[in-house]
Image 1 (tube, helix red, strand yellow):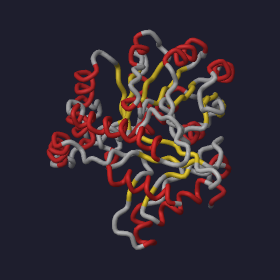
Image 2 (cartoon, rainbow, N blue to C red; image 1 turned 90 degrees about the vertical axis):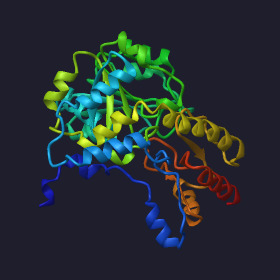
Image 3 (cartoon, rainbow, N blue to C red; image 1 turned 180 degrees about the vertical axis):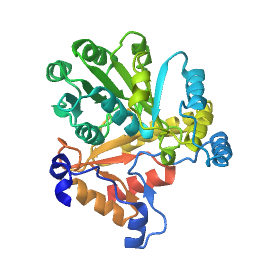
Image 4 (cartoon, helix red, strand yellow; image 1 turned 60 degrees about the vertical axis):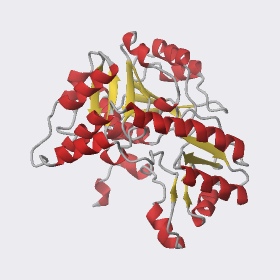
Length: 352
């Protein structure tokens, strides 16, 4: 019965995951693994978020609030008078926005190399893909992007970009917004680590959506909750096309309680900024400048997979960038973890 599977998925592989720390520990007999592959916050969730999650867990025999009011109220209290949508991770938000706006056959434009799920979500809706390669330094040529994405229904740009780490300047984003005819989804999963504030653009541009996540600074990766700032016109249509009850009660409560705990977020942001400098100074391979909670390292003359495997043998899990379309096969991505994890990575990679 495999002939029933859609041809687009037969032609293109699905999302490629990093190797699991548990598998590496078992294979090499290592008790303690440095988990630096998935851009997670190594610090547990805040006590306030944990307490809220435990309380919500007691009522999971009932469906959650379909309007996600607890979280919506928390977002408005934290950020001010904006319009929001939510989803199961930012992946869920992206998928629903494409479902809401893109008819089969219409175009989705993507700046590459970048997060592979954008293309998977577009294919799932039957969209045509337009990919616009970044420059050799991984910056965005805005004129080239606008020309290629001019008539696309949705254009997706990640800033700071995964896996390259660099952010797109605000004036470049404005040039894109004013040059395209469709909507720009600006993935801001890592924006808290950049010092760049794209929010003022929401007041001026009706074709901008800013995607955010609770997976990074708020330590809620396992609860899978994302949100986005949207123009006023979008939320009613998003709710109409969205899957019912996507945000569960536990995630909703934890996220709402995590937002006011700015000290929790600021601790990890400070850790990230400190270790980005350390990686650049101490790693013997070239470390690219980053505005995210990870760095990309050029491990030439090794391939991505070769270096990942060698680091795994010594108890360090990092991400091979081989699966990022358009990226040469000699880069790895390294998240900022706990001090001991980061120290171990530097020690091991410099010894190879």
